[in-house]
Amino acid sequence: MNEALTLAQLRELFLENPDLEATRWLALSISVLLIGVVLWLVRKRSLREEYTPIWVAVSAGLVFVSLRLDLLRELTRAIGAWTPSSTVFFLGELFLVAICLNYAVRLSRAGTQIKNLAQELAIVRARVDALAARRTEAREIVART
Image (cartoon, rainbow, N blue to C red; front, side, top):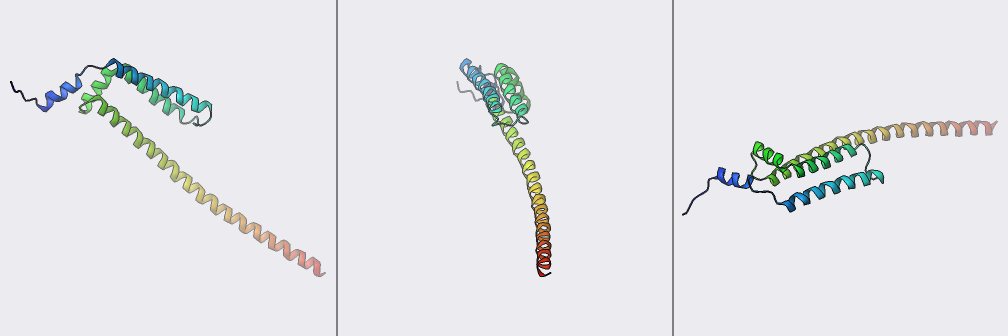
């Protein structure tokens, strides 16, 4: 018998594929390891505390998804993806875009601050030069008298 599967049936086959226990344990291990690395980096002061909640939330989300793969399958169905792994990659891509946008905003702010500081420094230097010139003039006047 030669049965042709429709795309919808093929998608359902992908979505109903049973989870491998090894995959679940690997995902859980990596998620817990990520939490440990984040906390270690905070302790070493390599990661600033303002970023800690973001990374802990991401790690906790990964632990949660690792424990409840059925919710990942439901999300996969809801967004119309074919496999749970494609959903994870899609969410990861969204996360990276958000991180890039965050850094672009911070970089723009830093550029503005650098420009303002350079302008203030130029004003201060001009004032110091003017004061130095007055001091030199005053010394010359005192020396003449």
